[in-house]
Length: 81
Image 1 (cartoon, rainbow, N blue to C red):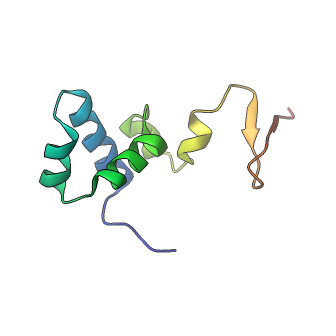
Image 2 (cartoon, rainbow, N blue to C red):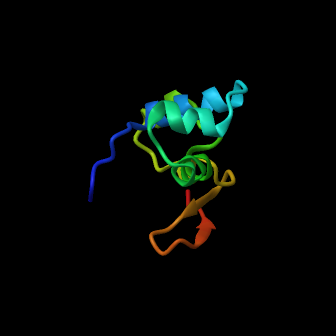
Image 3 (cartoon, rainbow, N blue to C red):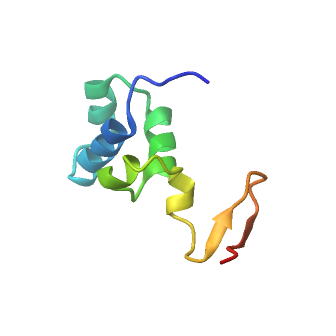
């Protein structure tokens, strides 16, 4: 799999800049990314903190409902304890 130019921490910091009020156009120009990349990041990493990114967990699993887990097939199921 291809390694990206930006780490998860850097991506989350870009998203925080947007939350602080900087427009998408300015952010894309400043960081050298396309607007499609920005919106993909926002979908994938939106709502995450830098501490979540360092844990190595998948972003979509961090936003799932408590008590549920995503399987490799993408289906949600109850966690067995």
